[in-house]
Length: 226
Image (tube, rainbow, N blue to C red; front, top):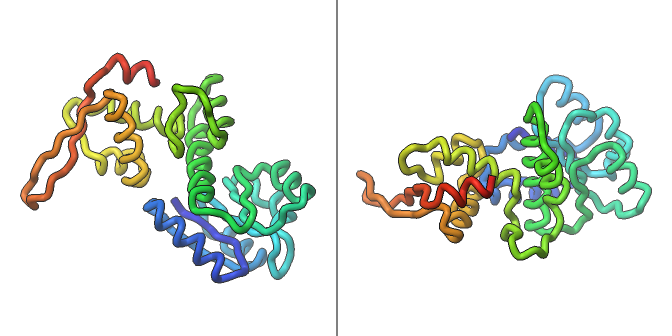
């Protein structure tokens, strides 16, 4: 994922970068500190995600949003007035975080962008996919809701991938094939083991270190989750 951070405070930009590293994405992190620098950068570079502050040295980020149509954007700013929030949402930001924010909330916002990109990559979508995306940031209280931090859209991608494996597979294999961090994939595989969709065994390779290998234990239950 290629990320552009538009933030005039170097310390805040550093926090953003550290949070991305904690998620262990294959990230290309780039930082500019003004709207002018952002325009120059985007004129010659493509990005997958923009992290945008509002109060910048040469203008307000919210006023720059109309120029950023087509980019997934997370606004992270101290601006908490309703006018700024409304303008940001009207201009299509995927999520809006008010400083100070937690890593958990940041992680949720990035996951939401992944769900958004996944949704838009499909030629056709059904109501369930739309509902999953629109509800991805909400707390679900139903007994059958997913554990906190898991997304139904990402779960579906994982399930579709593991169905293609005739033999056992590892966390790293699924992570590489879906271009999602190994830690994130591990959470989904652990969930599927806990509900008896997958079984997990340890295999030892030449390095002598055990590697978890997963196999499908209950195909019917897997298909019901799709």
